[in-house]
Length: 137
Image (cartoon, rainbow, N blue to C red; front, side, top):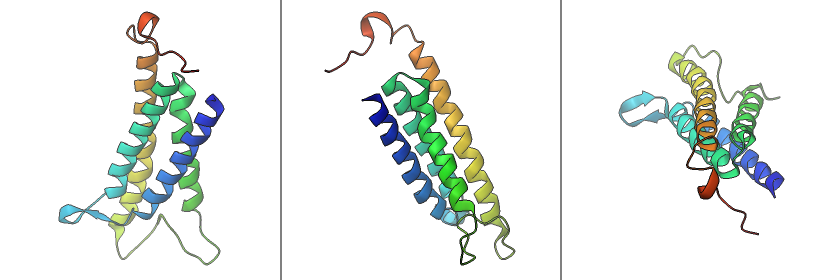
């Protein structure tokens, strides 16, 4: 059952990465760039924290962020037609390049936040002993 949970968490990480990667050039209200970075922070923190706390394992926090990172790395590569999803150099709009780098950095940092939340939750006095979750089977 735990393996199936890890597979689902990995799939969620892949879906988040694909959606967020295509939103790198999008702007938040008022013309400020960075929608993908905001979504990466919120998404990776939420999925990583919920995965780690829900499974009560550190791997539950790492799996979605690792799959997110691998997927972002994959879509960052050049496609056969020369297309690019996350630009590394764009003279016409240099803000997109900065947003792409911020997207990668914030996504990885959000994984660190999820890891800290998981470790603190698993070692918490509240989640051990009488309050520990029990199996439903």
